[in-house]
Length: 228
Image (cartoon, rainbow, N blue to C red; front, side, top):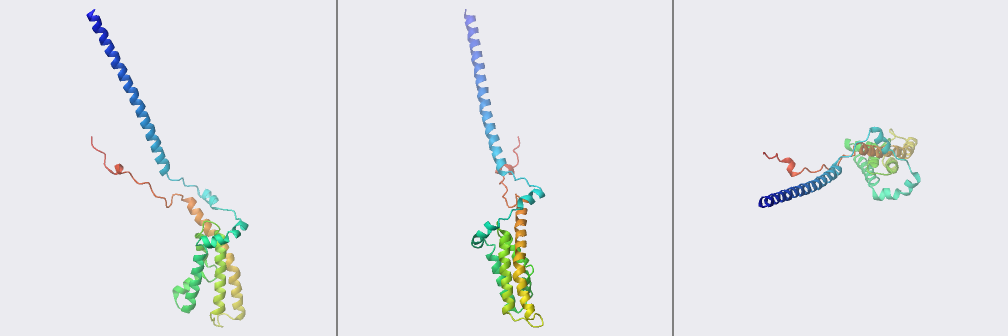
């Protein structure tokens, strides 16, 4: 009887140890699975947040950069374009400054002559008109047209008030040049400003990751792995 009791007790202890081991293994799997799932979800979130955007094709970027023209709406938003963006004010000030600089220097300075040719003299005043289209996200063609009108007016005022030698321009030629600048400059501005805005949007679509900060590297990644 004593031997039977000892055998029963030993069997009971063995069963208890087996049950305890099974419970520990189950608990370890549950906690490990939760940690693994959390690590996966955390790692996936980091990867998704730091993953660079896919670069579209050239034709896709071209289509996305092209926008339809809402002429009536853009005309109503001209005050916003002038007062809330630098697309009109900054190029217009440069045009006026270049004309004053060239007039006061008498055309003797090479730098003032270059600025006058680039910003004031038609056609096509590409420096001022391209800058007008680059400085706005919307209505770039309208910004170029307004700045082109400013260029034409400044050029006409220059011809009217700055003495021009008769050997260079006579009365009828002077009037023709003034009309030429007033008509051609806004048209050039519409074309060049619209192209500048399209070019800006195209570059952004073609390279969507430009200007984005790279995610900081973790401190542990820069350290060498510990030797075992």
